[in-house]
Image 1 (cartoon, helix red, strand yellow):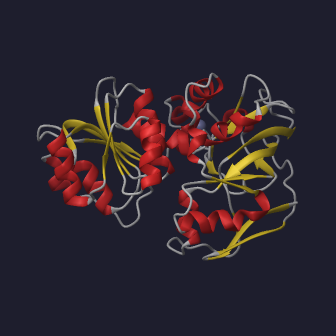
Image 2 (cartoon, rainbow, N blue to C red; image 1 turned 90 degrees about the horizontal axis):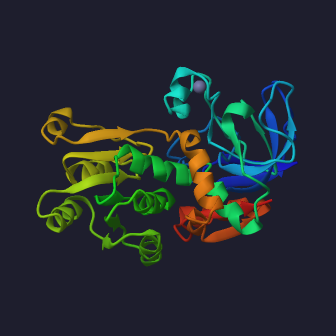
Length: 338
Ligand SMILES: [Zn+2]
């Protein structure tokens, strides 16, 4: 089998690797129908986060169950399944509270940019579709593994409710799907912050009513101007920098919520300043597993089409071009088909 391995910054290879095998009785092996490159894959790709030697890549996956371990009960060979980028038992107290990405047995997936992938804790992690999906639904189903579930969690964590004014900081795939999520949750006005024409267009297709191209202080001023000087009811922070986090907090009205899902890089909070804002903060790695059953239904019934976020499709063996295109912002998100 060949799989994707990051050797060093800007050095992604698709090379021979040992095919995954059942290691624990709770494992399943999935034949991936599609996988993709995540914005977070770009942190090690750019050398901003370090890797210790050659690292297998990929944590977004969906496909057909090939084989299951002897203790697996709910997942069967031949089913089409989607799993979160965090594996979870779905039975511990954190899982039962809806925070499967804090499962006491959690593990991060990291070998999914390959034709076969081993998924630990298969019963807790994987959710099957009602039937084998038509091929045109596969990209949208794949997004539920991480990017769509993360955009959804951003809106959930910001406490988006019908009729609200929502602002979204970040026009990457997560931010764009945060727009779609806010729309689905009934937001009336959705302000997408983007300065790229193609991303602005997709944001509008997903439900954005307004576009703000400014950043930082100027962006905060624009949001305040658009909300009678008060601020948005809910703000989705989908970047993870100091500037984007402060922009989100300062764009939110007193009592409003910020849902933050951008992985922080050198960001810190001034608690003294935060105290006087009355803003609620909630975020972290998205508990995608909590939302999978409902999101599968929405995709299956063609109520949402998050797969539109893929603007580049490549054969899996050209995965290195997918990284390059996303790194250079030529592509929003690259879909890989084995
Ligand atoms: Zn758990």
